[in-house]
Amino acid sequence: MEPNFKRGESKASFSGTTALIVAVGVIVILLIALPAYRWFFLISVGIGLVVAGILFVWYRFRPVREEDIENNKRPLGLG
Image (cartoon, rainbow, N blue to C red; front, side, top):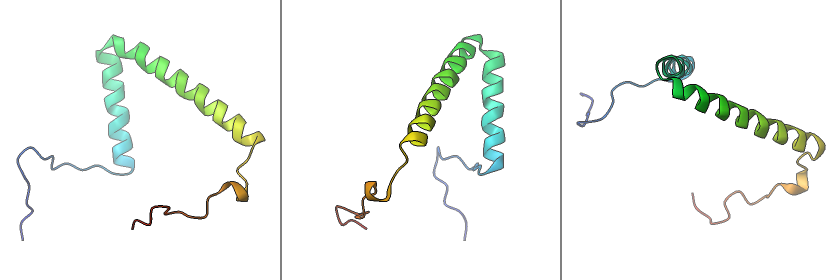
C-alpha cells in the first residue's frame, strides 16, 4: 500500500524536539538575514513577557477554585 500524496502537500513532518530546533533555527536565520525582524521579535517577546507576568501574578493571588470550574464539559452535547 503506497501513501497517497496529493500535489502541493508537504511530505515533511516534524514533531517534538526536532520541531523546536527547526523553529529556533528559522527564527535565528530571519533575525540575522532581515534586520526589521529584530525589532518585531524584541517587541513581541516583550509583550509576551508582560502578559505572562500579569497572568502569573493574577493567578498567584486569585487561584482557580473548584466552584469556578464548570462541570458540564460538553454543553452542546457534541461528541
